Amino acid sequence: MIRIGALVSGGGTNLQAILDAIDRGDIDGKVVAVVSSKDGAYALERAEKRGIENTVMLKKDYPSPEDYDRALADYFEERSIDLIVYAGFMLILGEGFVNRFKNRMINIHPALIPSFCGKGYYGLHVHEAVLKAGVKVTGATVHFVTAECDAGPIILQKAVEVLDDDTPETLQRRVMEQAEWIIYPEAVKLFAEGRLSIENGIVKRR
Ligand code: GRF
Image 1: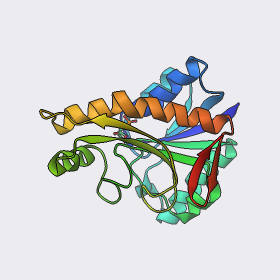
Image 2: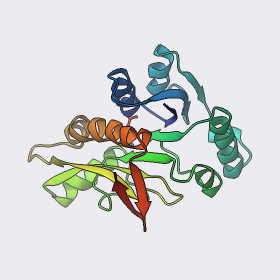
Image 3: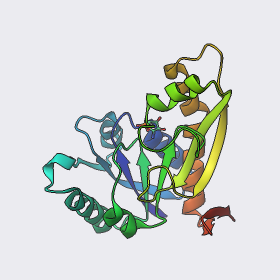
C-alpha cells in the first residue's frame, strides 16, 4: 500500500476522485497528508471529512522560495510519502523540492500536453485558449512533475470533444467529468502497482 501526499490549492475535485477510487478498492494506497498553498481551499474540507491530516503552507510565510520548497519536502518526507499528487495545485516548485521526489510526483493538466500548457495556462485560462483556437478536441493529461511547468513525461491522456456552444466553464466541467476524474485515479493505480517506467523520457506501462 503506497502512502500518498496531496498538494492542493482549490476545490479538490481531483483529490476527491482519487479518494473515491481508493474507497472502491481500485487503488492500493492511502492519502495520508494534504497540503494547501491557499487558506480556505475546499480540498482541505474534503480531507478533514475523511480524517486525513491537512495543513496550509503559504509561500509568503517563508523567507525564500527555496525555504518553502525545503519545508514542503521535509513535511512529506517526515510522513514517509511514496507519491505526491498535485491536485489543482497552483504553485511551481523548484529543483530543491522536485529532486527530492524525482519520478514520485504527478500532476493533472486540463489539456492534451504539449498543447495549451506551460506558463499562464491554468484553470479557466486553458479552456479559454482552447475555444479561442477553435480546436475540436481537447482533454486532460497526467504527467510526472519536473521543475519545468507541465513538461514531465506523460503517463495518461484522454480526449474530450469541444462543442460549438461551449463556454470555458462548460468545457472545464466536461474535461473534469469525462477525463480528469477518470485518468487521474487510473494513473495513481498504475503507480501504486509499480507498472510505470520511464525510458528516454517516455513512460511505459507494464
Ligand atoms: C482542474 O482543472 C485541474 O485540471 C487543474 O486544477 C483544476 C482544479 O482542480 N490542475 P481541483 O478541482 O482543485 O482538483
